[in-house]
Every structure is written in C-alpha cells, then in structure tokens.
Image (spheres, rainbow, N blue to C red):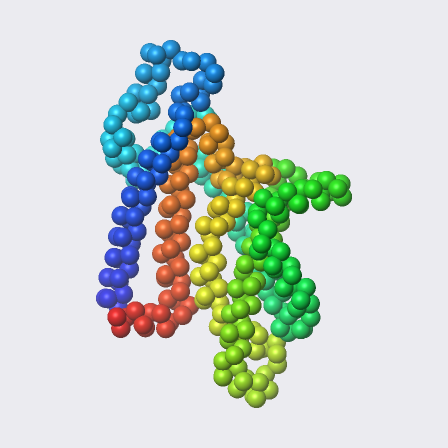
Length: 305
C-alpha cells in the first residue's frame, strides 16, 4: 500500500513538472507566431509609438522572454490567465464559459458513440446480422476526417431542407459521434474477437450459456481496455472539436481557439493551451487509477516491481 502511494506521488510530481515545462514551451511557441496582438488589435491603423509602448508595458511584452514565462507560470497557479485583448474580459471567465459548452458536447457525443458501438456489437455477435454492412460503415467512419463528415452533413441538410441549426449542438454532436464510432467499434470488436479465442469461452459454451450472455461477459472483460482507449482518444476529441465547432459555429473551446488565432489574442491562445494541457495530464492520471481499479492485475503487477 505504501509503495502504491509513493508511486502515485512520483507520478503526480512528474506530471506537475511536465505541466510547467509544457507551459514554457507553449508560451514560446505562441510568441513566435508571426504578427503581434497590438498590430492585430489596431488592424491596418498604425498605433502611436507612445501608445504602443504603453500597451506593451501593460501586457508585459517589454520584458525579457524568460521573465514573461516565469511571471505567467506564477499567475497560472494563482488562477490568473490574463485578460483577453479581443474580448476585454478575464481569460479564465471566457474559458470557463466555453469549456462548459465543450464538455457537454464531448460527454453527450461520447455517450451516443458508446451506445452506437454496443448496438453494433449486439447486431454482429448476438443477432449475427449486418456484419459486412457494419464493416463498411466503420471503415468509412474511421477513414473520413472530421471536416469531411461535417461538410457532408451540412450538404445533406441543405439538400433535404432540414435545418441543423448553426450554433446549436446538433451538428457537432452528430459529426463527433460518427467520427468516433469507426475507431471505437473496430477496437471493441477486435477485443471481443480476441476474447472469443480464449479457452474459457469454450467452457461457457459447454455450460449452455446463451450467445447474448457470452457476449456480455466478453464486453465486461474488454471494458478496462476500452475505457482506457476512450480516455487516450480524448486528445483527438479536442482536435476534432476545433474543426467541428468552427464549422458549425458552436460556442465552445474549439471556436474560441480559432477566433483567438485569427485575432492574435495571445492571452486566450496561451490560456486555451494551458487548459488543454491540464485536462490531458488529469486524464493521464485518471487513466492510470481507473485501469488499476477495473483491472486488479495491473495493481498486483506494479506492487511486485
């Protein structure tokens, strides 16, 4: 028990150091983007040199880069992500509002995608129907990018005269569910096929278990790896959200990133990146804990090494 607590402490500490490192890399990467926020703020109008100097001082752009990084890291741990140049409000307030919308979209689309995967597994392995159709659908879903599915959905809705409602959750929800279905259905299907090749499945058949019950047992065994893969693919959901939220004008984190990039709103860009890094590290820790809870063999193996 003490070794496990020590191991988690080391992981949290290493994640904390990685968080600081990633913030530094992110800050430098954003700053080397061509252009600057003051020019983007004034557009074609050239600001007065005195005004520009005062704005640079207010934003801290007049200080050496390493001083800016250290100052920003200290403010991050105080919950201060700066103030948006374009919107004129605190970045933390802006991100919290957008993050809530993106969290709803990600959660609902993940639930819909999981239900689609379970339904497809039931059709193929229990009812033993539409196997080839499901293979084709999953291949198309996995091969076409998010932008392609979103554009196709818009084209179909225009052709059929069905309003999908730009700014609503409907379009992004359908797109993300379709995109996620291809990968996760194929992953879950491969896991169940591997489990079906195990000897204990033959024992269940000889015991007279129904096919539905055996499939349920196989899905329960595949659950830890499936959930782990689901959390690992959270980064893909973030990337897809940038495309789909911008395409459907959904007010989430993805569209916020696009607007901040266009307006060179450095505080929002860096704050967006810090939030994404924090979520990724939190998911990494959650994956490790969840996998140990769902699969006790992982914890037993690590306690021996």
